[in-house]
Image (tube, each protein chain N blue to C red):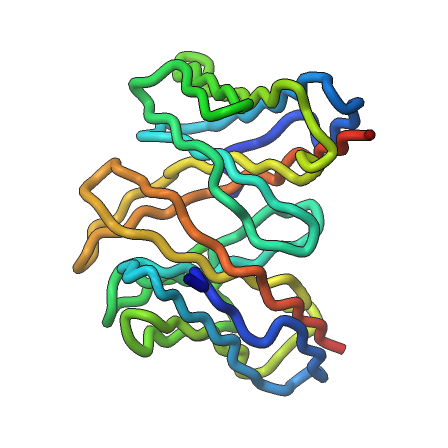
Length: 117
Length: 116
């Protein structure tokens, strides 16, 4: 079952505008990650925010986390055509200790962002 | 620095055929993962390997087997391919830390598999 659910499913904006994507999840988490996927490529990690953090920045990216509402948002400021991609949130729904320890992530279905020149 | 390398990039199979998808990482990561990505479904975990010598089922393991050949390599095998296994398959890897300390996963560019 999906832990994280992104909203909206698709977003189309003009270059220079800001893009906001939201992620809601169901159970308590240790941290939440955001990934980008360009067409035909694998996912690329953007940012990780821990459960005791409320906001984190990386370049033009701003991520917020509200654990009371079980939600996170990803803001891309001054968007560029190169930002066109799908964006996924991922949460650690389950941790299981094996020989070396392992972290499993559960991904949402993604938001498809189109930035028009 | 290649990161995570998957082979082949594309494959077409007939129902009932078998094949193995290969994945190798050069980042000295302990944990490796296989996901499938279907339209409208996001990524779903098939199998993972916490460390060399261990493998565990994920969300959708039926119809698949895996082998952690060594620390670098993690393969996914379809013994008898079915049309429902048509998908894009991604391999990923990550370092492992203590409880609650997720680290970013690094992904390959995927294998696009069609089963007729």
